[in-house]
Length: 297
Image (cartoon, rainbow, N blue to C red; front, side, top):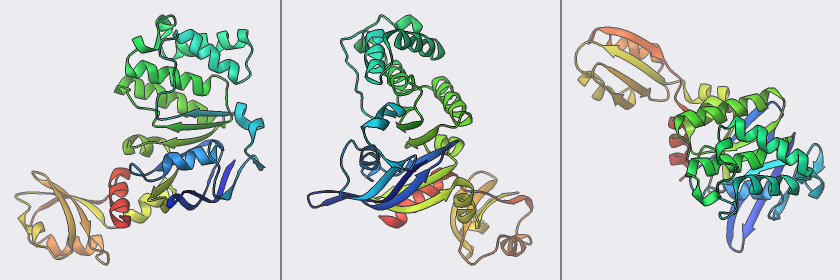
């Protein structure tokens, strides 16, 4: 388990990370989510001891993260960190050797992962000859080929089309099954919703919401409904129980005001319109993300 307790990181007069705490357990994917400039990358780099925290405690397997753990950690940064004029196979082997793999093991793992990500034909290409997506595949390979116990991925789906996004998702789910500890940082809320068990929202360096995905959606979903009806939706626009409407041709997704019960709302409209479908729905993680960030800005 990775445990972060009361982590704070200051740069002169700026507090980039402000007293946050979380834990990342094996066999789960932990989502660290927030807008640009929220403090996500600083939190990751401080957690990994790349930069020193101002205060707080960080432990991995009940020990402080020191050099002895670096070979057990895989880190995929958001920015590119590849040698552009070098060949793909040479770059992979170089980074594998830094993770203490023998040359023969490095070549073996490079072959396995180049085939798994369907880019073995690019092994002798230079990095700057590759597409953005294929460069991202190389960075992903470098992060995982030494079989790390802890994997921290910062925007791992950047540059991927839907087919390759699914390829990486399937690999990550196989890692979950094998018990790896995985932290995922992404702006793609639909992806986080499908992959993450636990969520931690950060904004302005502070925790704004955290917990299991199921609990977060339950807490935010109490007053969200979907309704299908005959005719126009004008009757919703002036309804005092409605806080927000996403209206379409003959149905709407509605957020009710806090103290309004969904089925009390249904009773109030059945005489005004023919209701074809009515259900309480979970808000998407994207909707929760937008609402949470708006509340804390």
